[in-house]
Image (cartoon, rainbow, N blue to C red; front, side):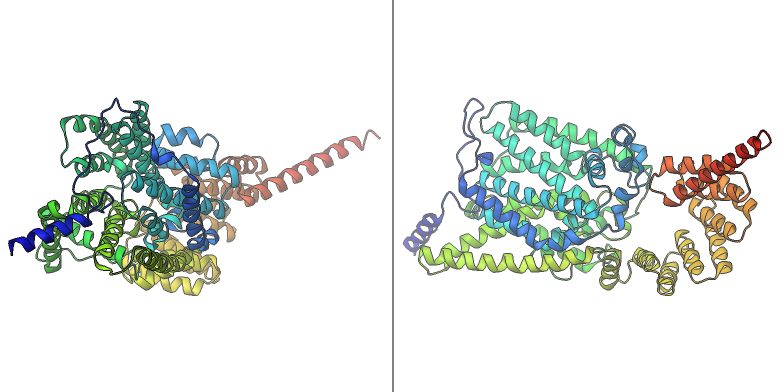
Length: 616
């Protein structure tokens, strides 16, 4: 019996190779004086073909995204004044409060890219979506090179799954989701440069790693988890984290905390939220969220933009079951690390660490809608994808009774099927971003409790000249958010389109009861008064709006109309000029200004002719 056990152990050892998904032993990291080629960026002909294949996969799977428009939080791009004006670049970097109204985060590198694109092609959505696709293809290629550098088996297939997985549609097909892609690019670039330095390259790579890390933080603050990932990779490679490793990573940690605090200070003034969950409740939410993300990665069905908000209770049986299962899985991987290697535990810990900022231990605004979102695991899922890929290859080598060539063909066919299925799901999911109608109707279909979706879908119906349908959705939204002043404002617009101005005015006045400082309600009320030829009252309201918000271009336009109707053309001209200074694309202000100028010029010519007539 003892001899049989020895024989089994010998057979297991024979199966292990340096390319195993979780290698038992690794050579020690070379000293800093050693000089070795930088393989992650050394491309051969086959490497170029591999990158091209990844780009083709992204282009095909995400093609519907190139036809998509702007939806929901893309207002950060389309409405943010700093993005639209030339001097906005200074405001983006050195006046964080200028973005407070739109998003509030201090992510200037992300907004700078939007600013550049606006100068190139304005607000044509196709340009922004194509850039997202290019960046996602680059992130997929960089993930492949990262996995190759870390000697992970099946690296290209793992990158292909990453490239076409439908979980990433939210980050790629949604323009504002670019922050996730940029963060991943900088994250992986920083990781590669850091370990290139550790493995013996010149010191410049350490500086480049720090620079890329800072760049990632200026796109999205969740990159602050990089120091933990670096320590984790050190442990995976050698089984320990030395004091020298700690000191190398310390500058990353300090810079990450500083920039994250700056971002937090910029954001907290926009949205101060506090959820009174206990630590136990937050831990149960986190445990359930981790299993939710893993499940959606393996079985990406019924993906939703906003998942239903879970009921939170310290007595939740599901929450405790998820926590127990998670702890048991971690303990088992730790216990078996001598047999299966440190790789599986490192992959699982990477997954959890990368998700840690959004596991609800720290309050953030989106928690009021849902505890989970597909976009949150854009970087994190790479750990589980690498684990599942390596485990599959390892199992195939040990279980499949096939020759090497046949096994390789079988794996390639199976891998091709997986990538094709994921690509089809991604194509379908990308289609929901076509416009606000498809987007919000999808949200309502998958989450009837998404209170804001009815409001936003009603806005789209209103733009499509379907006011009756819009009113029905506004009524549902009003029942769920009775204190939200934007809903009666939109209902007022719908009543105006239906030719019911009295009901519209009633809605605007009700909105002002909810929020007396609502510039939009005041502006719409003033506009309705102008239509009723009550110019003096409308002018008074426009003046009040401008005192509240001097940068409200539509209010300057409305005041110009009121002044013109009151036969005060010079003052009207100044109002229209100010409106166009604030918003050059306001056609109503431009047309009215040109008409007044033409009328004044004609009047002046007539006066000159009358003065010259007696002399003749």
